[in-house]
Length: 295
Image 1 (tube, rainbow, N blue to C red):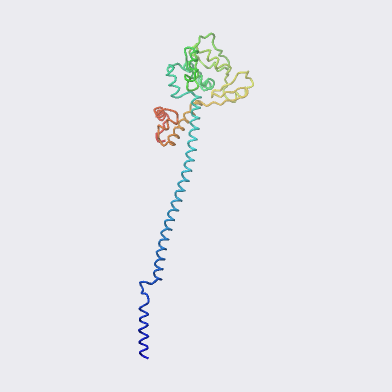
Image 2 (cartoon, rainbow, N blue to C red):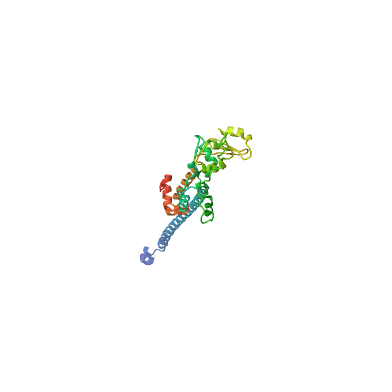
């Protein structure tokens, strides 16, 4: 019996020895492989998350760039519209370096202006300006026939321009009653016909209310003007602002230049090109209008 037990013990020991060792345990191998694959999966997931974040950031930048482009486009459209408005105002008013350069080029840089030949009673300057408008700054020519030189497109002035020529006075202008011409003193007789024609039918009233109250008394072709420059006809009222052309022009010009400097980030050559002026003209206007280069 004891021999049988020893034999069985020996056989069991041999069987146990034949079993695979701990280092070759397949379960542990599978667990180790699973752990490695989990680690690889986590690493790849982190990469995917990073890529998704980068894509989201890129999409946000694209969206922001699109909105910025829209803002810049609107700003550029506004700038171009204002520049066109400025050009239109300059054409109407007829002031600026282009006009002065043209006058110098055609030999009229030192020509007499009509306003230097006139005086007006105190308080009626605006009335005279409202009636004469650009004719108040008309340029004197030796003869009106010279205006034919400026008719061709390549010789025309850059903006609206009034011209006049002196002529012998054949008779003095009527200057009685409530006529505006009665308040004007003409220093040179050779422009009296011009002034008489320009002021013909213009009568004075001390206020807009009085002009409106009396408008039924106006004959055909007549009008009332007030000291403030307001004009009244039988069916219309034109309200006047002193320097009504020049002041808005300067304000709009300054606004356009500031906008252009900001839009083109201070690139003055581009600003000048877009505004249709030279760099020297641009810098001169900056000084005249009190605009900082970094506006």
